[in-house]
View 1 (cartoon, rainbow, N blue to C red):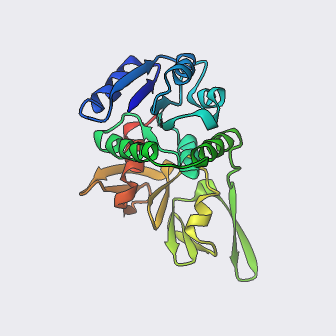
View 2: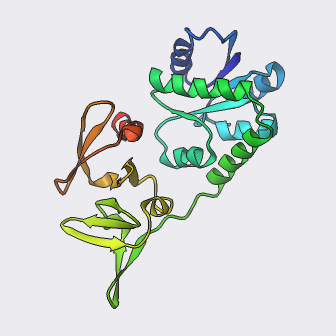
Length: 253
């Protein structure tokens, strides 16, 4: 495999090269210092995989995809700093991504997936995923600012900023605001899609927390965390959500 690293930060490129040093399938590592160099190398060298930084000056990673064309792009793993909006778009599009600082465990997972894509016959599916990603970034979803909660004959309007955390309760969501709780007749997965991912963080298949209400976080076992809210409530993250919690610890600003 020929791999292109496109990142304007020299240390970031060196870090990714170190992570690839023990990969026997890599025959060459190419480097691009900016988006324009990345476009030229993709067109001229035809790499099998591109590790593409999203936040590059002048010509960012998404502009690179547009310049080359999603149909002509090789397999891509996007590399990004803490950006919940971008991450949500990547997840919607099923395009893989790495969060800075990139851990060896997460790199191995992403690289393994990339190898499978490179060896598989996927037709135009990668291009469709890339177009979906660009559409999601260009036209971000409008997020809910308030919730309408039916209670008997009345309807309570609750601003999303007042919410501490959300809890799945079968086909309902229990909304926690301080010591008060409300039931909303909607599945948690459905409600999550309408919430601002820069404010609300899924830490467990049953819990979503308002990041502005997080007081402190403790590391637990097996990549899990204990999240304490300003109300004093403590919630344990699920194993598959550990990376999301790590992102807010590694990038607090």
